[in-house]
Image 1 (tube, each protein chain N blue to C red):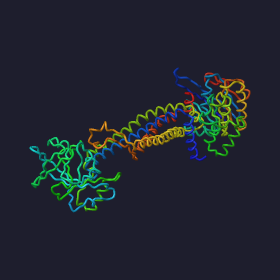
Image 2 (tube, rainbow over the protein chains, first blue to last red):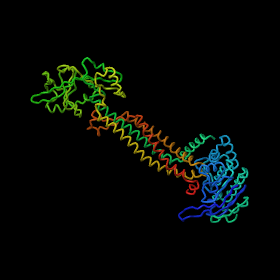
Image 3 (cartoon, rainbow over the protein chains, first blue to last red):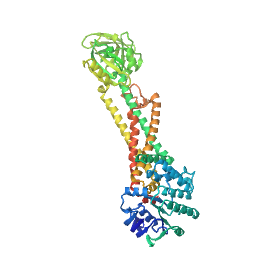
Image 4 (cartoon, each protein chain N blue to C red):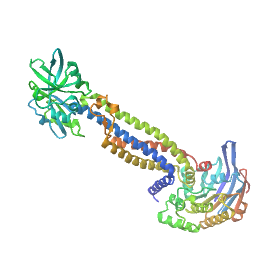
Length: 221
Length: 391
């Protein structure tokens, strides 16, 4: 369960103070939740605050009983490595690591031993249809392949929560659809709460619930 | 996975970051390699210059150890011990050289000509005539003395011993010039046989094998003769040379530190560029739960690895260059010909010491680590979202 209450976040920029997220409250239960909104509506900031990548100015974020907004840097990192999977808009993968190393990375961080790690990575490679590309480097992959690897990496350590920030934004519609299908499948398979931001309303039918954002506010709870 | 294995993973990751950064790594590495190799060579050269100054100073006349007032009952063989190469026996007689109306007060030094030629460079500095023979009433004058007296090779003059009234005729067989005032003024040389009589005491110039410490031999003599005689090492008799050598070491150390201070700034800036190139990677890592400490460790490991590998390569290159020049030597005569510390030869043989071998790479690693602090702090202090937003 993800509980967000009165969350606000402001940034200082060249244009002055920008209210990216303003007094947002919602609860995301098990399954998939979509946050829909145009570019610049505050979706990424909201996901970053939920994932502990940003500290909110006010309000609270509670993920599975853990007050994310109160955690120290070290405890936030521990939460992220154990309970969170994150998929970014673009440039997800660690370019110095091979596909295998990228997927194995969260498993290494979580102390999974080599044998189990290899088994898990091989299984995920098979699931994303990329067996044989273990040794490929990210720059040798297409955009769709890279996002599939990112999805496998985000889910590899079976996190409780998966945050996906416009994962299909850099992909064509067919590749995007395939990726989303895979992402939902993997999340369901691992019983993982998926919180997804997108500007594509067509994805809503795949989600259990959805919220719309505009100018940093939730307009449809 | 145990924490140790996690650290192994970061070390492996640091290697991967460096290997896959290709050109940036090579350029950074080359900076360190060039700096280490050059400074190893320069420090070896500084050691070689010190060696040359010592070799020239002791090899000209005085030897590594000098002793005076030794009784005639003591033989030169008695001073021969482990590490001594030559023990030169010299007798000093004060008196005057006369020819016509000219006279010059000198100290006539009775020597073994053959042994002097083998051990001491002054005896090979003949500019006119020939060296001394073991027999015959012959004298070797410095160019300064011969000019003062107006004599040349083949001329005869008289030597009168101060206080004894003893006098003898000596034939000038050669003229030498060392460039050192203490040898070119007020002394002349002859063989033992030419002396009018043997003084009751003699002086010794003891030349040692390479790498033998004069202090060790002096300690041995002190123990052997129960401190009856006074032995002085070149360090005691030439404090100016000791100071010069120390100054050379100090200035070399300052050069090493300054060079690496400047190189470290360059390396630090290059590392910031290098780290910023991978900023997105660190942002993604942090978003995945990598702690700031682990990111800092990864960055420091990258710096350590590139520094250690570059230092080893630089050391090998430096040693190779020193090996090439230590055999043939570097002729610096053009810059040393008027210098008293290079009176014998201006050829310098660079020599490796633990100081010249370890000093530059140790300094490189020290400054390399300092240069890693800045980029490591920048990345460690930033939040993942800020990093990802910035790239």
